[in-house]
Structures are given as C-alpha cells and as structure tokens.
Image (cartoon, rainbow, N blue to C red):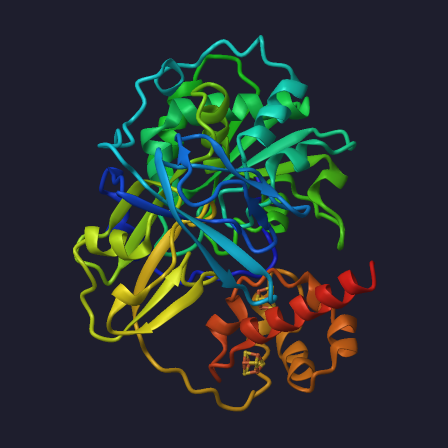
Length: 448
Ligand code: SF4
Ligand code: SF4
C-alpha cells in the first residue's frame, strides 16, 4: 500500500527519542500551579475567579472570550493566591491564575478506573452528548494546535474517517509513544467515542514504524473484536503528523488548499486527544493534566504526567537539572517548537505547562550564521506544502506581502524542513511563518 506524502526529511537517526521513550511515565504534582488563560496561540479566556477564592480540581476557572478557546479548569484544589497579568505578542492582556494547594493535595494517580483497563460499553453515549462533554471538559487538540475539539465535530460535512495522529514525528518527543504503551485501553475507548461523535465509518490510528511496540499494544487490544478501528503503520518521515501530510499518506488524497480536512470527510485528532476524551467522559475528569516529555540536555530525561500549570523550572529540576552551560529551552520539539530561553540559569523561566505542551527540550546552544542563498533548490525539494521557500523568504525580506500571497505563503505549515536542509543556514521557516501570520492578520482585519 502506498504511504507517501510530498517532500519531508529524516532529521535524526532516532536515538534522540531513546533518551525518554524507554522510561515509564513519572507523576509529578506541584504545590503551586500557574494556569494561563491563553492555552494555545489563538485562544483567550477570561478568569472567573479572584484572589482568595477556594477552588476544587475540575472547577471551571476560565471561559472563552473569543472563538478558538475552550473552558479552562482548576488543575489542583486549593486557593487562588495571585492573578498575574502579562501582555502577549499580539498586545493582548493575558491573565494567569496562580493556585496553591492548601492541604496535602492528592497527587495525580494512575487511574484504576474500568476504562483504563478494559473496553467499556459506550452504547448510552449519543453523538450530541459526546460533543457537549468535549466542550464542557475543555478538550483541545493535544498535538500542538490546541483547537477546540467540539468545534471540529460540529461540522455539517459527512465524516467518513477519523485519523488518529499517533505519528509523533518530531525528534525528541515521546509523550504520545508512552501514553500508547501505558494507556492503551483509555485511548481505544476514546477513539470509539470519537467515531460515535462523528458518525464516522471508522478510525485509522496512524503510527510511525519507529513505534511498532505501541502499534502492537493497541493492536492486541482491538484484536478479534470487530471494532471500527484500523491501525496503520507508516514509514517514519517528518512531518508525517501534519494534517495534510497524514491525509495524503494514509488516504492517498489531498485536502484542497484553503479547506479543512472535513471538506473531504476526514477529522484528524491527536492520540492524546483521544485519551483525554476518555478521561473526560468515562473518568469524569475535565482536561486538567497531560503528559510532557522533558528531554535533551537534562540529567534524567523522561515523561511526566502533570497538572496543567506546572512550572517548567520544576520539571527541569525534577529531571535532574540541565547538563550544559549554555542552553536553549524549547517548548515542543526542535522542528516546530518555540525557543523560550537562551542562557545558563533556567530558574528564570516563567512558563508553565499548557494543554498543548508536548515537550520541554533542552539543547546545547550553538550559534547559526546565515550566508547568501546559493539557489540550490534543496528547500523547495523538501517542502511538504509544495512551496518555493527561498522565493517567499526573499519576498518576506522585502516586506512584499503581496508577493508572499502570490507564492501561497499561507499554505506553509511551519514545519522547519526548509531551514533544516538549507546549506546557507537561512532562517527560512521563521521568516515565512512571520510573513504568514502577518497575512492572516491582514485578512482578519479585512474580515475575510
Ligand atoms: S516553507 Fe513552510 S511548509 Fe515549506 S518547508 Fe518551509 S516551513 Fe515547511
Ligand atoms: S536551501 Fe537555502 S541555499 Fe538552497 S535555495 Fe533554499 S534558501 Fe537558497
């Protein structure tokens, strides 16, 4: 069977993933959490609590003020001790609710609930009920985009397939790999709920062949059960986990430019989203925790199940601390993550875990110096979106937004393949992403 998508790269030999993939998930419950009212780039909520309020884990503490956001819940029980305010890159004021646990908070414990160990009867759950619970429980795409899941399922299109993105193609990250190994039943229960929520024919769980053990675990759970679920093992290649790339690789078709996958009858969810849905509906726990990979230049790399709002500094210290003098701290993976810090003392990091935080990656800082483009065409050959990155880059450097538009810069998925292969070390993906965001901003202002 053909499993192909245009472009792409093989950025590493996979040993980076071995740093954390072999260690069972550790559980860490902090005394204080700092929960941002912006859990993903385009989602802003308003805090519903004030300093001094007592909250219980699972209480709604933030509600959306704009499309693209989801409910935010208290991730530990305790008292609100501070509401910080910061200004984001789009000049929006963002509140951060700081909660301190008052008693000895029950640590997060691996659930012994039925749905974590068996496939359960889902016949009493209707499509409408599942979508309503997604919204109440603050479910978002856990793979990085953070788009509210219930909105995807309110589509009027007929959905045939749910693609479960378990590719985890970014180097270093292994949180999805570990949850497949350790929470297989919860994932399959969650996938079945997603199929019901869309009235879909079936779900295809897409796993790269560097995680065959995970495919085996999930395969054993569904074996001989006549479920609308298929497990598809794909050749490892980056960025397999991109929405358009996974559709192309698995279904051998393309999502038309400017359209959502639902247009061709497909919804794509991250495997972590499937597990979180099972936790919401079958475990009665809104989205208040997640698994985060802490890896790279730390003493004991691994994966942590933590409450949303856990400080990055605590997780880095919990992993034994940084093992290099000059480091870069990246939120997410090395290809698409954001660099938060360059320097020596990571204790100054202010960030805390969001619903979309898949990893905290510590890299040795190495300087990059750009040289002129030599027109080798390598960036064009690997671009999975079929773009000419060097041409868009020149247009972006000239502030020529019209030309960026003509070169389809908005189709860029910010995968970083072009930057990775460029022999001139040009920061193509960064500049193209900035230009793309500017184009989206102009479109929003024009109401388009
Ligand atoms: S132009 Fe965008 S989509 Fe194409 S390789 Fe670069 S970052 Fe990826
Ligand atoms: S890979 Fe770098 S040097 Fe080659 S064409 Fe693209 S921008 Fe120019």
